[in-house]
Image (cartoon, rainbow, N blue to C red):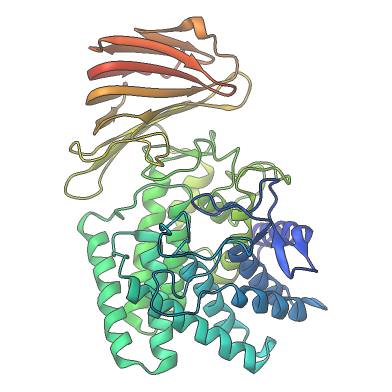
Length: 479
């Protein structure tokens, strides 16, 4: 490993070692509320992240690591649902404390089907890279667990090729199982699946699940699995080509001095890569030193710290980026406008400036945003006088069209639009209907709304425009 990847891997393993509980043979959650699954399941231990730790242990291969990895894998296998005929067949508990699903259980709340693929692909990497570091009997159980995951996914029938990050992992895992099991039918089916994923991407050189600091990082993982381990030259070539294209697309939105990707974000857990761990940020840390990588200082309380435990996968697979992409991570090429067709109905635009970045997504009025949505169709980010990243984003809206140009954002919708403002030192009194005087940034607003209100909570302020059809936000490069 080079020094950046080595430092990333070591930091990941240090935190995994710190949170490992030898009595449970699993990694504990760093959060007092328990292990938070993708959609809110809480418990003391983390099953998926423990499988990631096992991969890291086998890669590190220091005295005692093989035995610990074996024990962790044994515990993870105990958490797989192995009774056929139910929707959650082949997936895993997010935490051992999670109650078993029943006939009333709802996907994401009662179980997470995606654990089939996060854990299954991790098992596959172990079986490919380190088969001699585990007992044969355990390897057989891992192969069987992968088969159950594939069978469960096929039985449930919920997955579509446009669900990008999971579709990529599933496509690799299906191909891997087909080859191991000598299943010609699975090999043909997985090849057709992977070709469809590639076809969807090739239409506009964009994934349907677009521009996400977390999920694009998982996309890079899935594509790296294709390019390294795909059973055919065709699959490996598709993976490598899409991987390079995705890196180029991401870097169009990246501003090195802000250490952030600009929106719009189809799915995002946060607005500032300096304050939470994103998987794209973890990938970038393998190429950049700690001072320049888009990751926060790491403590036990860091938001989304467990995503750091994805580092062993990155260290093993390697970060393959075109030379021009590597340069864009470190040196800003200058202000520019981004425009990208996502699918037949959606277009993303963004302005990447010297000190402010902003973006919008025109959805042909097919997508809205709500209190629990990860979709952020209009965003603004800049560095405030405090040195922290400030942001504005639409958090609630009816179906929307938003677009960016060099001078600002245009929003079209029909109803109530609520925008969140996060900037240390913001004066509520300076948030007016026709403009917001923010620390380090003054935004001029014009809107045909019937009403305007300002509210706040402990962390953020909110401006709400009621009865809105058209809004224009003028966003200057300097205050």
